[in-house]
Image (cartoon, rainbow over all chains, first blue to last red; front, side, top):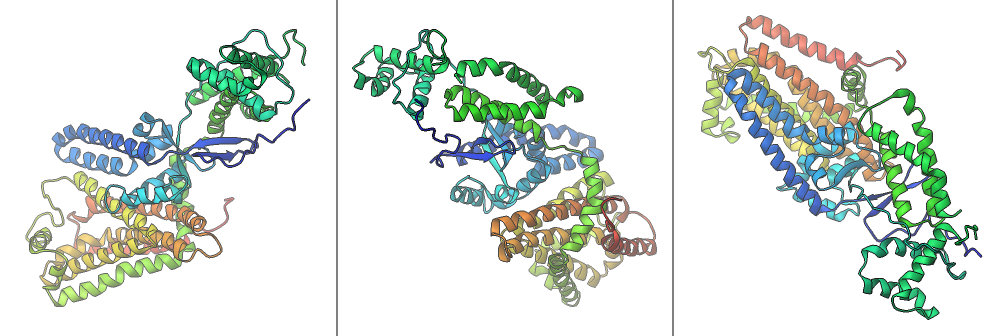
Length: 243
Length: 322
């Protein structure tokens, strides 16, 4: 009764910002690369934080010689190594974290010291001639939105995972879906059952009727039928047989 | 297999995996317990792959993917041993990289020192020449800095202690080094410009100060730190040229791949040169303006050049096992 099994693990390349990276365990991890706007916002936030850090250094100047020396060293460290320290330590600068961004190697592993140093030293070039103009142009020309520093260091700026609350099918009694449904359709049924509680009633019915209308089920009964199919796919027949 | 049974069967693994992940993410390491983590990670990866091929609900697939993604990040977390790394860099990797990339580094040295020498000669014979690079006000400042009549030659603010000057030199010089490296990614042109300009400026200052009789404070002052500072700037520029070389002449690799290969070595060069510049700043702040006799200062300068040459020629030879 199985529909011919399509290889779901290797879908066609999505027209999307999702990049799949195969790990040594043979699975694909999805990376959602971040575009220029969230990155610019993160940059602005980091700029504010850096300004705050500079202000914190002001009292040092009261210490005259020693204080000036320490303040200058601290300014140097903040100028060049603020992003490196945070990226290697926590995966992202505070600004990026606030916007849910992370820096990773292209193979989805967390960014290390060499790559982070390189991408942040090359920041000076991305900044040219003013306000990251060159970096913006390069990142808009690149499908993965990489600026020059990212290209040279083989890093990506990606969106963090959004915690996806999972809801199982709500129906208590399963009902066997028509055998002619293929794998894609069954996946759609399961996806519908999970998403349905978040949809408006009318939209729920509209979506459900795509599958149920040819079988004469319309209106409020349509979503219920789909949910029952989903329950069956999830758990098997009501009497617990494996179908 | 039905999804519900699948979830039921593996729930224990997933819970255990989650616990270990949380411990790892909070850096609460317990060696013996963590030994099971890699195996568990591979198992959960297999569950994720199964969930996808069997067409289980997108929610379950997403949940498993998030789990293995977190595990992947922990399993491949880079180790950071700064002290050991810096030691290995200076004892082995840096001198080796210097010898491996002799060509761009000699070119960078030439781009720095040839304009420097030419400009020094020019400014020595034509006192007006330096005004093509700096304006009269900056020139007056420079002249006052090395005025033999002053107590603390070479210090912009005589009241400042050595430590304040150390901070200033580190920020200024390492910044120049980093910039002359980074600018190299623009097909090497940026590095060339920064090297030549710095050469011209230093040469002009040296020539001009010698011509007006301030050489007796200028040369002893710079002799101590010059070997390390000037060569480190040349090395940073050379690392930039290495990036440019990858774009101009990538060889058998695509340009991006060549850039990445060269960037790895360039980064070693820059890191080593940055440490050299910090050392030079130490000398410049705590020794160069000191009261030691001129002959001693020149001797220290000569020793610096000799040590540097020996280091570049000999350090990091031999096999890795030792």
